[in-house]
Figure 1 (cartoon, helix red, strand yellow):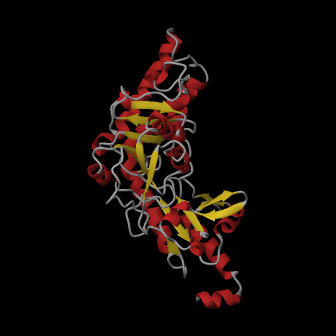
Figure 2 (figure 1 turned 45 degrees about the vertical axis):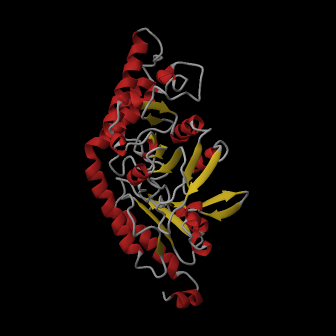
Figure 3 (figure 1 turned 180 degrees about the vertical axis):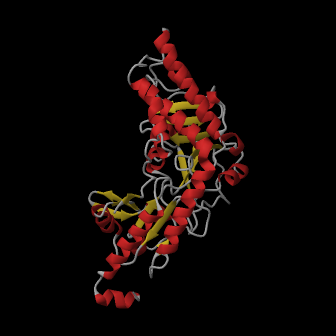
Length: 369
């Protein structure tokens, strides 16, 4: 018994991607900046991966800057626009919220409704906007295309770290200016990501000291990881519809069983979400405490809370949605992957039911169990 239901945190590296990476960790160790044959082989591998990623997300290869991951990609953008009047989504990842709050010259926040969807009517006239494509906690798909139409004069950055692998992502069709990607969210390796830039010629580097990535990001490239990211993107392009179909069935089955439990709350269930994510709260079970019990039983999930100075606080996402703190503190996120099964889900539901059975009789009678 047991399973990993935390694929929004990270995904397993695809075996095929690992196979592609191994030569660049062993025999093909040349520096891609070197002019000799080994260097040219490494450089060619990077450019092949760049083309593979571009094909997956529909952009031009020269619009892609490889980075160490989503956090660095976000920081690159925020540094570039630090002097601009900006707006940022109120439910963004900490890598955006904590960086932009310390750098933006004049900052406003884009609110969400009770389902966690950004409300873009009446946004201030700003020069730069940063929002997620998909929220990492609720799985809500945000109205990026609508925002682009509404705010045509602003530079628009979209953190798509939680979108690639869960829906079709088309950079050129969205008409945005910057997009953040993270390989380990779609079965690529950790420690590598990308920033996609609409106009790379005018984009200036945060990290200087070398001419890598067309002088946009200094430092010797992680060739093996970049190769793995490129191949993971190729695998996605080949099987995305089947992947979405399978995971949708798993998530729907989970929620059907979950809704049989009295008093359960599923957040953002009435709006568009990616197929793998269910953010929910169980009555009478504190989120962090329940997570530890799940872990002891072999089930790996995430909570919707943040720990600061040993004090557990409810999710800032649920706070922004106006969810009562007594419910928000119980929040749990399940996020499924292609390797999960119906049997694993049924075993987890049985685990929950067993916990409910062991509640005191006084609580069960009040709750109607």
